[in-house]
Image (cartoon, rainbow, N blue to C red):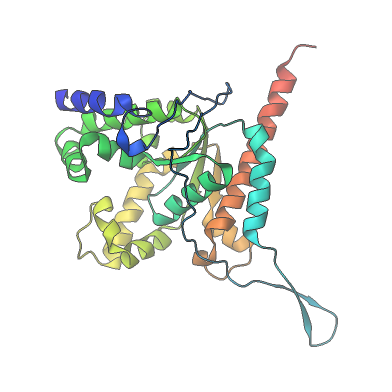
Length: 295
């Protein structure tokens, strides 16, 4: 426990300001859903760059005119629609942070970075912050094994720091949905469950085996082993995921877009759905606030 406290005071307690892994060289003012705050940036802060995303599958709608021929209807560039939607909702969002929950995966990471890009937010991964506060990946793993309660305290401290800030997109680890205290911290922003099919995540892990240690799997783990491990882990925390403000299901999105495979859903497709859900949530909140005002 003392080791944990030392780590938290030396790293997590300085999270938004002195800790070098956050790259913050600006004054950060806390933000929540109920209060409007700002982040003042300086020129020394690195601009979040767009990572490489899969291009959407070539899609078209076919319209029959009674003959054997069909007319192809071109599909608009999804990135244009995404940027427009981000601009539309930004005034109503008022800098509220967004927490993405769900299985750890490169898909969720790419989504988080893209959302941060189009919304002009900062992006963070809570698991990475916990590891940094503990002194690295191996130190965090050791802490988890030798002092489970202390490790969970570290997760809570990181979430507490992040939830006190605004204009963030956070990929939250499973610890964020495994305690009432952490779930309460997510209430300071908008939480979205990114529901990715387990087999799709497993495929990604097998394709990029550098992810195996993050799931506590050996370098020689086979696809069936990875799938079984992920399925078990997913069921254990699924109840926590379901408490999110909204859900983006890759499976349902693939059906909605008439894709043949879940893997055809692009990061842009998912980001646009996230923004649409956020738009609905902010609209409902605005209506509730209007209804609560005295006549």
